[in-house]
Image 1 (cartoon, rainbow, N blue to C red):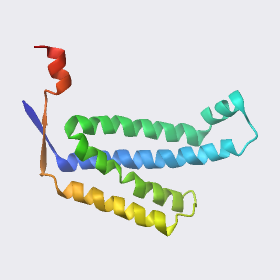
Image 2: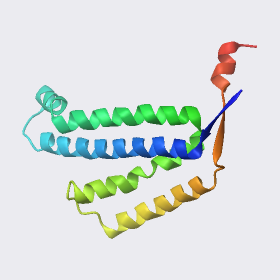
Image 3: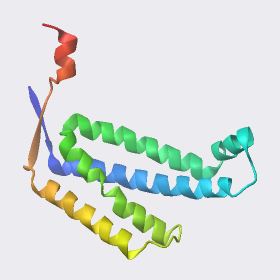
Length: 145
C-alpha cells in the first residue's frame, strides 16, 4: 500500500523546519558568544550555557527541526528531503547579517547562492506527488521471512 503526499506538502514542512533550525542555530550562536565571553570555566560554563535564554530557545527550535525533518523523511525520499534542508545556508546567512550583525563576505553570499541553485534543481526535478511505500526495509526485517 502506498500513501501519496504532495511534494509541496513535503517542501512546506521542510521549509518550516529549516526556518526553525536557522533561527535556532542563530540564537544558539548568540547565547554561546555571551557565555563564551565570560570568565567562566568548567561546570559554571556549562550551567551558564544551560540557563541562557538564547541557548535554551535555540536548542528547542533545533529539536522542532529534527521532529519535522523526521516527519518529512517518513513521507519522501532522503535524496529529496536532504537537499531542501540546504536552504538553511541562506536563512543562516540572512540571520547572521541582519540579526547578529556579522559581516557576511561576498564569497559566502556567492557560495550560498550556488547552494540555493542546487536546491532549485532538485525541487524542480520531482513529480508533483511523491509516492512513499509503507513497507520499508526496516518493516520487512521486523516482519521476518
